[in-house]
Image (cartoon, rainbow over all chains, first blue to last red; front, side):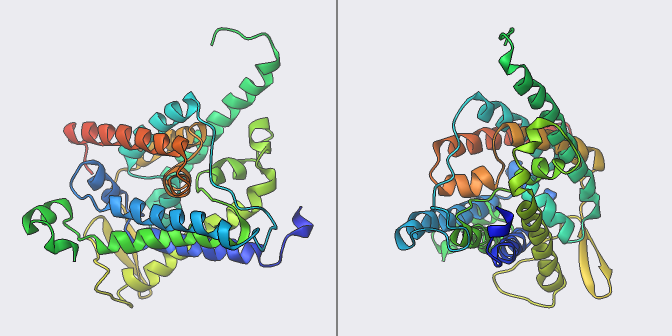
Length: 153
Length: 185
């Protein structure tokens, strides 16, 4: 797979990330305080960030598949981002919500926060890796026991 | 302008920092995702990086499913960090100014060689504990504010819309409790 990759694949991913991160900085989403101000109903500006971003992706995801047959750098067909719904979406969403409400930080904004000079955010990034690791160990064990007779759920 | 349609006092209450920096920033966040989508067909999210990167150091079977995407996810994340650094070098440092950009007074700033950097006042224990929950929750819940909130909602995915409503509602409840307990900053 790697050897068939278009030479512009990585540069394009980087440029996309660059614009994405610049936008997070410009919108002040890289500042946990601003996110907390939204969640505490003191500044509703965050609605314009999520709304503005979703409008742009919504238009592009709707239009591009009609204009192009497949993606030039991968040859892949354009699809929508559809994930299956199950109770994990609710359980995980709720856990994420508690973390987001406590810290004012989500993954993309945390990476951007490092870029604006916020070294204190390394606490949040360290926490995220710890959390991702904990769920990874737990779910690896779960997957391994799936072939065994089902126990109490 | 938006401001002419609603009572100025109400507008000031709802949007004390205006809306332009938020809207312009949001459009750019969306544009970044679209650039990647147009070229590659990938609707990227930011939280998978956490799991995919762990595949370099952990043999846990859960992480192995991300081996094929882990290298570009690192490049995407480095791009995000670099893009925010470009913002710090320009607007945050005052080298560029725009009527659409309003700087804020949150946290504290410090200068290194003419570059204005920014530091949060939110306490480390909140960041660390919140980070652990974010790490667990985004991975179990199949996405975060970018995967579900930007690309998923942009795809009109019902799963993502339900996901966003869930984490938004719980986050608001949590932040209100934290505020009521007078935890600050």
